Image 1 (cartoon, rainbow, N blue to C red):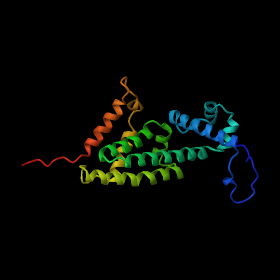
Image 2 (cartoon, rainbow, N blue to C red):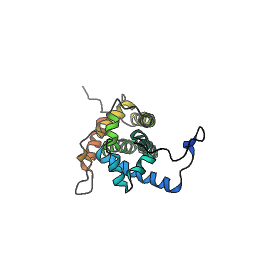
Image 3 (cartoon, rainbow, N blue to C red):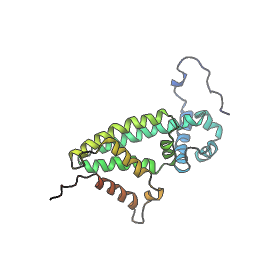
Image 4 (cartoon, rainbow, N blue to C red):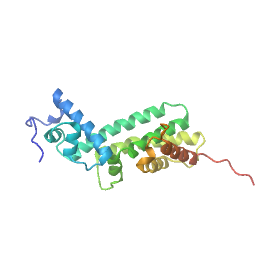
Length: 208
């Protein structure tokens, strides 16, 4: 059972009150542990396991996140920040294909390396403000990269939706595809990413 609120309801916006420093620290520790556990074990990992990973009591987890949805939304809010950073970094590159490789690769890796995120993205019955915001952020970026690619040698029919499908395809690779090889390179993932990008390049017209 969730613990009762730490402070009484004294107005319409009690949630806007800043947390005490120790409470804020506990929240950050729990959230970081939850992200690690979700990435490895999926979105249904227990609060007890999260508490153990964070090195706190399970009551601390419930005080900061009274239910699973609250915790999931907090994790997805951080994922939105990750997407924004990846998009900004990629758009800053002048080389169109290098930018597309960075954007598509980063977005796909977020799914490939995070079991919980993959599960949520493929659960069509799960309605979430965080997932909606993720899609709101990534869809226009996909359109932007598709337009840049069309202008710089990609197929003329390439669309933003196509780019999103390519991200989902790469993000659905077996987890071992992202494991570093003995040389330190993610040979499997990088190879598939290269094949995907080669597949959208415009082919020269054949003679005859």
